[in-house]
Amino acid sequence: LHLVGVVGIRDELQAGAHDTVVDLRAAGASVWMLTGDKMETALAVARNAGLLDVAAGGGAPFEGQQRMEPSIVSMQRSAEHALHLLHEAAARGSRGAVILPGAVLARLLACEGGEAALCEVAAAGAAAVVCRVSPSQKAAVARVAKAAAEQHGCTCLAVGDGANDVGMLRVAHVGVGIAGAEGR
Image (cartoon, rainbow, N blue to C red; front, side, top):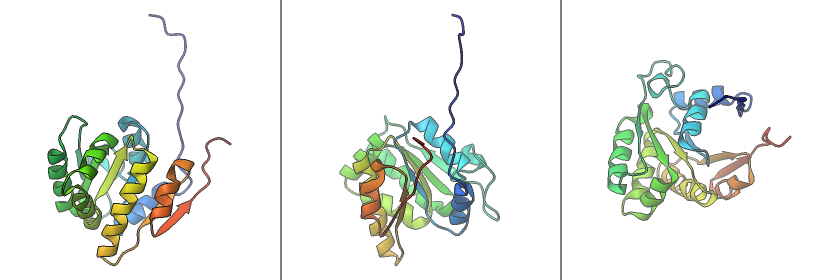
C-alpha cells in the first residue's frame, strides 16, 4: 500500500456560532443539533460549536457548571434503552446530553413514551446531537420541541442553512434560515 495523497476538508462554522451556542447553553436553553452527517462528523461539529464540553471531548465546560455527561445511544440499542438514556440526560439537566442516530430517533418517535421523553430532555435544558436524520425527522423533532416549549410557556427556535431544513423551520414557532457558506 502506497500513500498517493491526502485530502482534508473542514466545514467551517458560521462566524459567532460557537459563542452563540455557549451563551444559549449557559443561559439554560436546550440546544439540539440535527444533522444528516455521520456520528463522528456530528460530534466534531458539536464540540467545535461549544455544544459539548471537555467531558464529551469538546471545549471548556460552561462557567460555573459541572462537566457534561453525554449518553451515546448506539443504533443497535432498543427504543427502551434509548428511553432510559433520555430520562438520564433529562435528570442531569443542563449537564445532560444525548447523542442519537436517526435510526434510533425513528424508533423513539414510533414507540409509546418516545415523544414525551424527548420533550423531557428539551424541557430539562439538556443538549442533543441527532445525526443521520432526514428532513422529515428534523420536522418531527421540531414538532416535539415546539410541544415541549408550549408546555412550559417558551418558544421553539429553529435555525437552518439548507433546503433540507425547510420543514423544521416551518414547524417551529420561529424559523430562521441563514445563508450558508457552502456552494459559494
